[in-house]
Length: 453
Image (cartoon, rainbow, N blue to C red):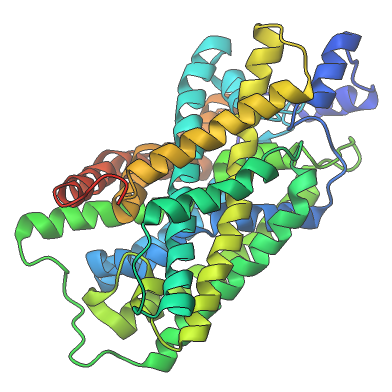
């Protein structure tokens, strides 16, 4: 594959230490901003940050997605998505330090290098914000729903008055009004580690409890809907559910930015080691939950498999609490780049002083906003499908490929050229058709929905 930078250029550039032309004020600001304030992470930080970022609400909807796709297309979509997203994640790790002496610490900085200063911002930032804010809104709903399920199983068991989902979302949000004031990625490493462990735990419980329950009598593996329109739109929405499940790319450069790097030991080596571990965990979570969940319940499975499972009560209650702990960590992983963007604009563009009360105000406003939207529109399945296709497909499936073609310019019709164009075509198709199914599901749910129920 071709490259714009020759090996001789790389050697010459690396033989000289990079010159830091920043002023003292700029250094102080970079030391305060969340993404660039700490660069002492180890490779295993990359592993559990990536697991926390990727394995989340999406894994619980995979059996439901399988029920919309069917066995053949479902297995194919799951496996192809795993392969494509691992490839595009490798591209992003490689591109993090493609320019000697410079690190692309944020997704939009890589976009600016590929497409130009202004165009790169317009292409990347809106999509990245939709993904990160969308994930945090969905996690507000997921956290609230899991808390409610835990309460209903442990405290109620259908014997007491039902408490509105709205209140459980507010309880879940209250945790983030505290955690959101942790300054950077490394400061949330403990939360992220706990979240990664929880993701593997509740995924194992989900498919293990499904096996224990056994195949549902008269199980059906046909499409859920009986109408042609329902089948088609359900298929589209399910593609969005799968895309949502592979969403870690939106924070991968920001995670890699926390790892130290020298010409002799570039950050891509420990980062890639962590990514491989993370993707093994992803496979151990996604494939058993998706395939076993669908095998046991067929097309009657709910859009969150833990809702389908009710017994043993103590195990399902524990799994729902594991989900709560996990999405607490996931929320913070996706919120950190948003905090970085907001604080960068306020401090560098609008010239606010980098103080604790500026951070206190901006982060509380963000948490309150995601809580409000989550309480107002808790359409879990529809949100997954809509956001999954609309925003996750570009940033995960094909935008890294477009950047790779623009920067490295591989020889036309070479293996690299073909591989990237295949990913781009599949990703664009996913981006077009998946939101249609998700939007239809939101509209159908909205017909019977009461606000703040």
